[in-house]
Length: 428
Length: 119
Image (cartoon, rainbow over all chains, first blue to last red; front, side, top):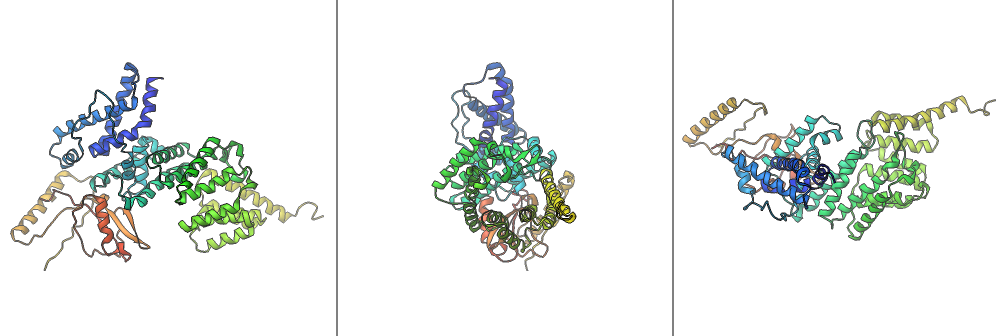
């Protein structure tokens, strides 16, 4: 293999582990990132000359530790009087230098500490997401900025702010104790799922799906599963993302949105489906139900239905009921109402949707109006359907979703004008 | 009577270091005079609000917010200074302080002190 390509591949795989280890040793995100980058640069210049090392991952880790020690030494002489540096060195520096020449180091996997620190609830969500992608995901600042359609300085500022808060407020670099683990793990899962969703339904812009973020979220989901394999919700989250993702190839056609009902199921990614179903199975066996597992189970019922008509909607309604018990949110209730419409009739579904709408909480949620419009369309009430599609259009920001709504609205308006002009034959 | 003096100022990242030094010098002067007269209890600078964490109750559950989030109708009512291992320990203590965290109105804002700068 080409040495450059090898360096890039290994770096992509290993940078999270390396950064995590260096943060533990140095107590500083910035130092860890710099040293990791320097090690990568060293690999890029050295490997093409000397050949790819037998254990490239260990080579990179060792080189990064060496760079870190160089850095700390350099800074110690320059900035000896500064409290922050003294604190870091005293608190975190290794008692003895690792053996850099001989066998690869056997270091514990520090990525678990890293992910909990990045997703610490004292950091805002934006900071958590940026920091997780930057450190654990190994994405560069420009890459993250591009993925979120944000100017680079904005993203850089978020990273600086989050890292500074970790340092200045002494957010600990450790796996939380058992009593706070469930809450803290939920925060980690939420960050990963948010990254996935940001990729799956790009909140604005012209692309519906940003594959890079979806792939990154799945990768992070795999890491979390690898680190804590006995946590059923970690499995549930990964299964959910895989099952959603399996339908990605069918979700758009020629730049247009295709609804689940109308998707060409032969385009669904069979490997992802199979893996998702297997992981969900593994999660169920741990017998501790949770929201991600339930959502994955709902998604699985779509995956296993050969045709849209064969979907087990009754079972989906039941799973939504369970989900509502754990997570009583109007959005979950809306999804359930749609499933009820499919299993017990559109009239019944519409009644449910209108009941949910009474609270007003979903007034600005475009999918509420789109779902309502869809049921009215199926009930052949084009006048009211058009009205709801118009409301949905005012709220939707993604261009592809807007195009879909516009098409549906046009169809309703067509139907209306046919009605008002009378259909041929009806009016002699 | 003991009085608490709350220092309010505008946080700026582009502050002139000379100016900063002069302000610190003036603080030291006030502190040392107050100490000489035997009235100084304590005086310490806080780290900026970017290091703040606010804890507030949401349906009886403590919720963490990144930053200072006291509402304008909420007034400063008291303070604790606790020496904690890290922010997690500080958060655990904050959850026990009766105020917003215990379901009433209000909140607790945790701000780290600038260790070692005052003396």
